[in-house]
Image 1 (cartoon, rainbow, N blue to C red):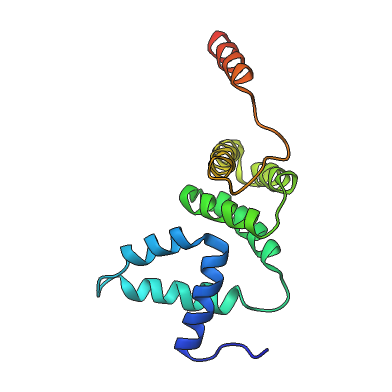
Image 2 (cartoon, one colour):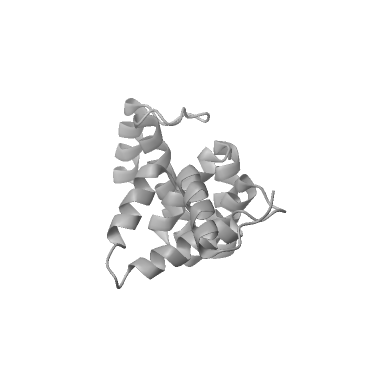
Length: 157
């Protein structure tokens, strides 16, 4: 398969990959937010070069690219983007265990505050995916009773 080379080819290839990884709803919202004459070139650049050029390159599969992006987003403390890439990583086959280990490694290199925030973002995304029927937790979440107990213990410590 040949690599896309023109702007239109890069955009089309990028749009396909972007929707598969980030999800149709997210991409639609991003494009709607970038429809002005001022903002559209940024959406075009992101779609062509990030998704059409980099994400379509050989050498790394999508799961590996997602894993890299998770670490990068933690390092940048880019929490909204982290959430997008966690959702995409799960779609790309990253397991909950692999996600947890990536976040633990990121905690060591990026600092405990960044790691704590990253775990909160990840937990929220995983739970949201469960609620929407997009994912089944493999490591299990806390039951309502366990959450209440943990909260009470935290308040008394």
